[in-house]
Image (cartoon, rainbow, N blue to C red; front, side):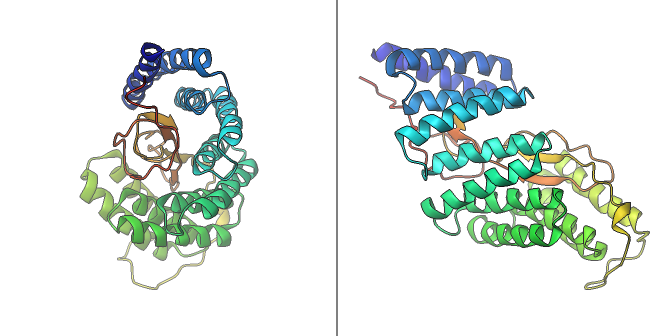
Length: 319
């Protein structure tokens, strides 16, 4: 029994490393091996089985097999709701992941419903300024933006910004992503000068963290130049100056910039940071700083989100 547990944990940890290195087919194979062992040991209604279904969903998502990813996330969620409770933060992270994939599929209404549900759970389970609260507000804002409600989107982005600055500081990548999203809303609302000012805040963070040649930095620069081009702005940006324009000139085809959720642990679940840095090469349209979640199992710094309330940590010394 102990050796079987160790084998499943080893598959999970190696799969996490493979996924981090974008070797997603290898990661999927390892997560599937871990799942089979856990089903034999514990059955389907066990938290470690839920972890593996979640990880398999993550791998399918990375492979752009979104329907399979959602299917496995839903199985994971159903197990978590049985063995934990519906208001557990791990359930919120999986709901967030499903919402992120629905967003990627273009089903913004369903994505919004999932992100609102995740937020309600987090309001119960987490403190007000927890970083996952900021994640939810950011994702809800993106959904509202895609649904054409820029006023509500801006409110949610500003709430996310407030939490990110308080919890993680002004120089954090999540803060930069939120500045970027606020800028996109401001342009759509008729304030390209305000938008450029917000883009420049995001740009300063990216240059400081990643350097001038990093894709994230270049993406923000493209957003600034695209905004100037769309509104024939050539002079220096003056504080408080606004510009009225026809919203129809904004193209609505930009794809969401998807981050994986950060957390501490060996792979179990999000859309936060690292690592899905696809969709950076957006020409003139603003890119969206999309932040999600993924559960992890062993304590291991994967990225920026720091705190993992997940109950799913395999015992490193099984008997």
